[in-house]
Length: 536
Image 1 (cartoon, rainbow, N blue to C red):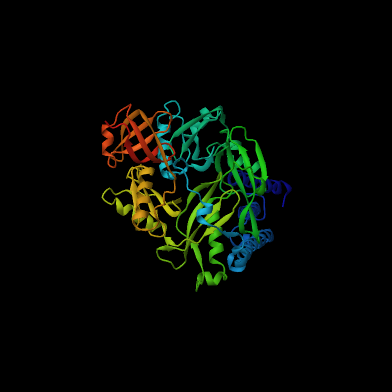
Image 2 (cartoon, rainbow, N blue to C red):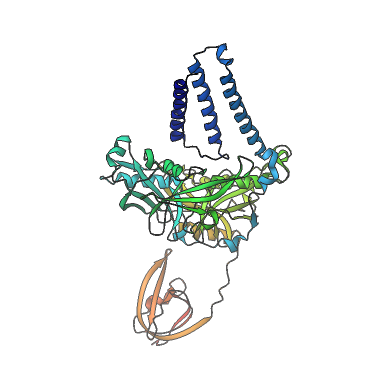
C-alpha cells in the first residue's frame, strides 16, 4: 500500500471521526454506550476506507487481511459491549440494584406540614406552558424573534414554587440576526399565584439549547468536560434571578453501564458560559434538581421490585412494589421533592403508600398510607363535574387537617384551570369542589366532620368579660349571615355579634353601655352574651 494512499485513508477516517464527534458529542468514558458506538463507527469507517483504497470488490474484499483485522476488532468491540450490558443488568445484579436507594419510613403529619395557600402549586406543567406562551404573545418587541422553550423547570425561588423556562431563537435566521446580543429574557411563573413574568436580563444569555456551534449548551459542556456523562439538563435561577444550566453527571455503580445515579453536578452560567463543578454532596442548596424525577422513580422501582431477585419480579412477584403511573412535585424546606404513589405489582386500584424523593440529595421517605390510586382520585373529581367535562390534573399530595389529601386542578378543553378539588386518600368518595382553593378546603373540612373522619375541636378558650359604652358599631355579612361589629371605650378590641343569636343588637347605637362575655380571637372576639346596662 502506497504511503500517499495510507495518508488519505487516515485523513478520511479522522475527518469522519471529527464530524461524528462534533455532532453526536459522545463522552470519552468507557461507561458511556455512546463511546462504544463511536469506536465501532471508527473501526467500520477505517475498514471501508481500507477496502476502497485496495480497490477490490465482492468476495475479494472479504479475503483482504486488513478487512479481516478491522472486522475482528469490530466484532470484539461489539461483543464487549453486549457482554458488558448483560453483566451490568438487573438480571445478574438484582441485589445491587435493589440497594441503590436507601428508603426511610416517615411520619406523614410530622414530615408534611400544612401549607399556606401561597405555597401550593396550583398549576401543572401544561397550564404553565399555556400561560408562558400567552405572556410571550403579548410582548410585541420579542415575539417575532423568540419563543418560549419547553423546559419549564419547577423550582423553589425565594420560598415560592415557580416554573422557569428560557426563551429560544424562533428560527435559524432569527438566531443569526440576534446571536450577538444573546437571548434577552426568561419566563418565570408563580405556581401559587399564577403570576407570569417575562424577566429581562441586563445581558443576554449566550449559552442555550437553541444556540449553534460552540455556544450550544450541550457542546459547551462536552468540551468543558470530555469524559463526563451528562444526564438531562435543567434550567434554574439562583436567589438573585441569575439563570444557570444544571447538568447532572451520571455515575455508574454496577459494571460498565448499570446502576445509574448522580456523582457530580456542573453549573453553567447561561449568560457568561462559566462552569463550576461540584461533588453531589457539595451542591449549593439553591439548586433544586440534581436527580431527575424519572431517575428517582426508576430507582424506587428497583428498590420495590427486586427484593427477592430478578426472576421473582417477573414470575411470582412476591412482595413486589412499583410506583404508580405519574408523579408530581412538593416543596418542603426549600427543596423540591418528587411525590408518587406506591402500589403492589398485582394491585388494581389501591395504593399501599407513597414516597417522597428529594431531587437534590436523593433522600427518600416512604409513608405507609393505604388508599386510592391517583387515577381513582382523578376519576372521582371528574365525576363531580361530569356535566362540565373538566379534566383533572395529576394529584398533588397535601396534609389537610392531618389527613393525607389529593389536591387536583380541574381544567376545561382549552387547558385553563376552572375549579379545584380535594379528595381524601383513604376515603376517595369524599370529594370537595371549589372555585377557589379556600372554598374547596372549607367544603373539604366540612365533609371530614360530617362523615366522622375527624371531630370538631373543642373550644378551650377562656371566657372573658368586659363592659363599657359603645364607641363604634358597623354591620357586615359573613357567609350570608348578618353580623354587627362593636368597639367599646377603653379598648381597641373588635367584638363580633351574630344577629341570629342576638337579634336585639339591631337596636343598639353608639353611646349605649353594654356588658359582654366573649372569647378572644385572632382579629375579632366572639361574643357569647350581650346585655345593655343602661336600659331605660
